Image 1 (cartoon, rainbow, N blue to C red):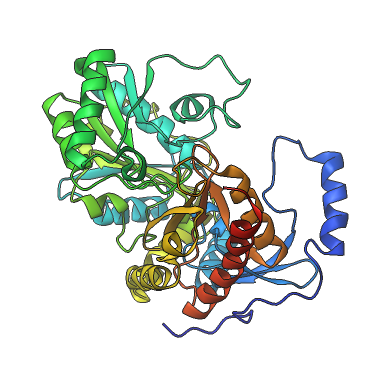
Image 2: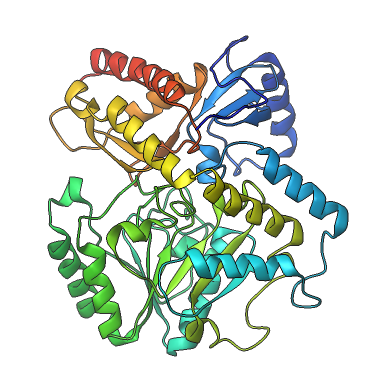
Length: 448
């Protein structure tokens, strides 16, 4: 795809990172911003375009994180900016549940079209991924009359009190934050690199745990991330989700695909659950849906969605006119510019460039991914023991050399690469070179 950007699509450093203006802003931040709102890199951004961010000191930085999967279509896309600006000049808010407007309906229509399944679907629009997950819990409980909620080991579903309970690891999200809601259960998942099981074997292990620890007839909903983002780009073995879907159908359990990070064209399909040839009952969407504007949704079978009484779901800013205008522009761009195809191009480029890292670097246990969503699991050489110190070193080297990559994994040992689907092959090569420098230094300097 050929495109013209307001910022040249190349890495360029004019100061050390962080630069002097970023250092000054960090000092201001420490006086007023809560410590708990931590930051991966204290480099303050001014503007961006495509796959490049420009900081306040004028450094051009390759973005392999997209704000954790939000700017899938690239930074500050002019079509999205224009749609949001035009809408802001007309109407910024009325609250859909008081006096509605067309944008909300149009987004719901599009979600009904692009989410898996050919049945009638309804949606509710909210603000954030965690809010979508919370509403999906409420809807499933209302529909089934049950209370138990199941999530997978290594899952991340949010930072609200309920969604923290559904999130797997205690640090840093849950530490000291309790008490937590009851009837939330974490169950074994399929993690091919670590368990060595087939999809069917792993599914039967999951099912056995539910039957022996919870009881299938007690479960309202089974939440899955088809590709676990914060969990370390964990992709279950083939057949795992098919068997779990069958189990849910057999036992009247609502099967929920949490597509907040992996959905909206990131993996080469609209939703990552489609790679598993499985149709969920409900889908949660957020992050990439509106190009950086806050918007999220729960979409699913009309009978499930409509089991909630009027007023039981929704919220003040959910489906805001400006955010929904941005989302409609994003949908149009994905189709007009074949961004599903671009995600597949990025996948091919990443496999070609980093796919052999497990053979080249003794601290790389596995490279895995789909579309523009890859993980590099770091281990102590000759073992599968997680190597979080190595990840810290790689991230530090990358950020000081103008590449933003993400950490991930239950043991903080997975390098997460989630660029925009419009990133060029040249930028992928340049960023990979920077990351390779760090891996090479680690193999030489760190003991096995």
